[in-house]
Structure formats: C-alpha cells, structure tokens
Figure 1 (spheres, helix red, strand yellow):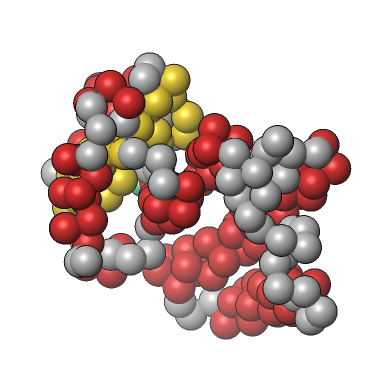
Figure 2 (cartoon, helix red, strand yellow):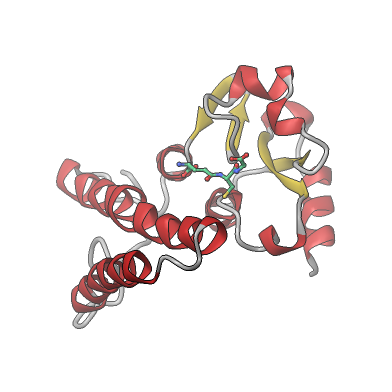
Length: 182
Ligand SMILES: N[C@@H](CCC(=O)N[C@@H](CS)C(=O)NCC(=O)O)C(=O)O
C-alpha cells in the first residue's frame, strides 16, 4: 500500500468522531520530505492501529504561521494531534499519549513507563538538539569548521552511547516493546 492509499484507508475507516486528526506536512520544500517529526506521530498511529486522518499542512503556503494553526500549536510546528478536542503538540508527548491511549508500546507498571519516558526525553532533549545544531551550522555558517567538528563530536558521543545501550538488547527502553497496559 503506498502512502496515499494508506491515508485514504484511514479516512474511510470508522466514523469522523472516533478519528484522531494528525496535523502533518503536506506541501513542503523538497529537502524536508521524509525528514519531518510528524513521521514520529504517524509511526505511533500506525503501530497502535488507532484510527486517524491527516490534515496535510501547507508549509510552503505559510499555513503553520496562520491563525488557525497558531491556536493549536504553541511553537507553530508540527506534529500536533487533535483527539476529539484534546490537542497535543510535541512529538514525544504525542507518541506517549497514543501509546497510553492504545495500551500498546508502553508497559503498565510505573517503572516500565518511566523507562520509556526516560528514553523519549533522551531522544528529544539530549540527541535531537545536537543534530539540529549540525543542520543549523550547515545551513547558516557552513564555514564554521571548528564548531561543526565539535558538535559532530558531541553527536557521535550520544549516538555511541545509544549503540552501547543496544549492544545486548533489542529494544532501547525495556525488554519488550509490546506490552498491554493492563
Ligand atoms: N520539539 C518539537 C519539534 C517539532 C519540529 O521541529 N517541527 C518542525 C518540522 S520537523 C516544524 O514544524 N518546522 C516548521 C517551522 O519551524 O516553521 C517536536 O518534537 O515535535
């Protein structure tokens, strides 16, 4: 099933009311395609099987800066989901919400849940900002070789530590990724 068929299948499944709306990227500059963080939310929606529809944002046309999107997205960024009026932004929060709602991808006990939250924080607060810095330097100051080298070294450190964590385990957070919450 290609991407468009997948979206159509979701649009046709269930009633409008029991569907989550994912605000993700539609029209975007070519380099951004396949790189955006709404894909994290879409991954969680696909893995959990929760019914959803996609509101394809027109990034190129300025929809992210418009009044309507400003009301639901604190930083004018995607992803955002709207679950029957309950709006969640920030990809890690969206993924955790979907996991909790579906009772999938996260254990039911407090220690297991905290372990999953720990690694979500690691991804968005430790690793992602460093990778973002590399992009920013590349785009705005590609001649800053010393700075670029230092940030790359830091990124290598985080990714090396992720590799170390995964040396003797299949899943980053816990022993298995498929628990029901009960
Ligand atoms: N911390 C946010 C970052 C989201 C983010 O960076 N979204 C980018 C796309 S990957 C975006 O909406 N960019 C448009 C803009 O900033 O104008 C998250 O994890 O959801």
